[in-house]
Length: 240
Image (tube, rainbow, N blue to C red; front, top):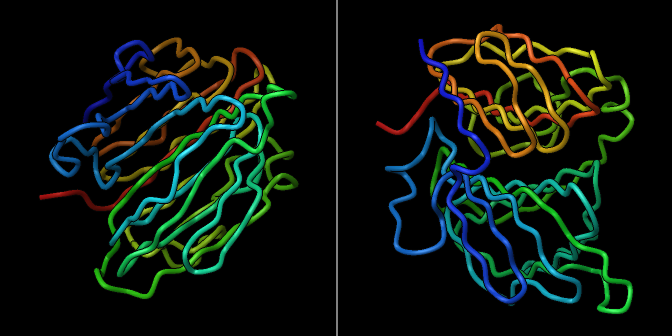
């Protein structure tokens, strides 16, 4: 059983003229994503995209891609004809399967100057070569409860958008100061403070951008010090 605290400043940092990318696992460049993964989580990027900018059309294959917006609006369009405006409280899932091309852009114009801050997460599918698919779900009402909400899952009987890996689930909580949640028990867990600050039982204080990676444990209480948003991956398998 292990708990590893990853301070925000220890993340891999990559940027260019319009993108500031803070990566829990190095993803930009010639990296072995599977070798650097924790459990099934291969990519966990917190990206800030400047107004009017974004990713031009590019292709993915055989990957489950989850997108969670923290600030601003992301405009999505893909080769399967799916389009969407992804705002805070709306989870997006894209299953790349045999291959899909898409664009992702900050919907804000240069004049309005609203930044886009978004977390994008990748896990592998159970089966390669499936038909590409897409799903969105608005979970704002559920998050208002202050409880831990399952927003995406391949585990049977769970809520949220469906992902093509039956060993994984993504949970989100929006907490007022003093509110607590409990980390699910799992062989692998990843807890990320997307906003605010919190105290993690047996670890201590966590600031925005900090993470805790869990192996063969769970049940730890996370208590918000300030208004906070917490993302938790529960994973019942990992790369060999």
